[in-house]
Each structure stands twice: as C-alpha cells, then as structure tokens.
Image (cartoon, rainbow, N blue to C red; front, side, top):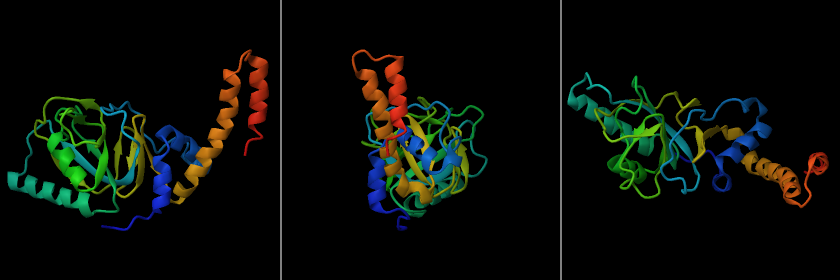
Amino acid sequence: MTASPIDASVLDALRRLDTPTVCNALERVVPERRGHGYTIDPLVCPYPDLPPMVGFARTATMAAMYPPAEPDAEVMDRRVAYYRYIAEGGPLPSVVVIHDTDPHPGYGAFWGEVNTNIHKGLGALGLVTNGSVRDIDENAEGFALLAGLVGPSHAWARVESFGGRITVAGMTVDSGDLIHADRHGAVVIPPEAAAAVPEAAAAIAREEAVLIEAAKRPGFGIDALETAMGRRKDIH
C-alpha cells in the first residue's frame, strides 16, 4: 500500500466536515478553485445517512450499452488488472470515480452487491459515477454511493480503462486526487490546501453563527440583519 501524502489527523478532521462546508473552506484557502473542482450534475445518493467519505481517487471508465469487441479473456484480464489498481494503485482508503462513457449513461450498472463488496474489501470507501447502481438492499454495508441513477440491469457492464484523468458529473479527477464526498456531491481537495481546510471551515462557521443566531432572536428584522452583517466582519 502506498503511504498517504496527507497526515492522518488532517483526514480525520476532514471527515468531520460535510462537503458543502469543504467547498466553502476551499473558496477561502484556494480562491481560484471557487468555480470548479466539484460535481455540478445531480447525483443519486441511496444511503444519505452515511458519513462523508475522504479518500484518494481511483479513476476508471466503463461501458455497458453494447457487447465488447474484444474476446472475453481480454475483457476479464483488464478487469483483474483494474482490481489490482484499486488495491495497489495509490494510498488507501480510496474513493472510486468512474465515468460511464455510454451514449445513455447508466444503461447498465457496473455497481451492485458483488462489486461493492469487492471494492470495499480492496480498501474503497465508496463511489462517484455518472452511471447507474443497483442492488440497493444488498450492497456492501457502509459503502457509499453517488450515482447518476438507479437501474435494474448490468447489461454488458465492463471496465474500459483505468488510472487516467476523467470528468464525472462536471468534476475533473486525476488518479490519486484527494476526494471529499457526501450526499451533496463530491469535491477534489488540493493536497497543499488540505491541512488548512478544517481551520478555514471553523472560521466560516463562527462568522455564519452571527447571522444565524441573530435570525433566530425575537424581533429579527432588516435592522438586526444589517447589524449582524457588520459584526460578521469582526469574527476571526
């Protein structure tokens, strides 16, 4: 297993944050990242109560709509090589990010009871894909899913490639990128910014608390809002 480039204490702190909070903090830590690096297309989250997943990306592409052109043995060899990449292709834990390249993404699900258990056993926390998932009641316990849709069939689902740069739901990801994801979506965290995100998130929470607490007080109105907005600038 490759050693993590991020200290374990930083990863633990990131797991205590939700993904919108991480996005807010990144806007402060790396302002140039404000408009990209996160998912923008709607994704289905079958298990919304699972905690955020924080891990290192394993990237792949898949297809399912048409039978493969290669011999079965070649398709199987590629799948075995893909599983080896999941297990050994970078630091653990991992988050699998897989781009469904079909004209109709989700035509066939690569993800169900079998693959969620295999990937969990190989150190993956969960999945982000524009494709489909199935077996909602039978999937590996605790394996997080963010997908384009839920569907019934796997059709001719197979891995096409792995380990490169892909874009899923508007988020561009390289193999090994640090991913934070929950029921809201996913975001790539630049490694040089990771340690600063929890502190930035705490500062933002203190600032937001001024407005939220003011809004909950009896008699709240525009004058109280303007006062609170002015006070917010003094929070450090």
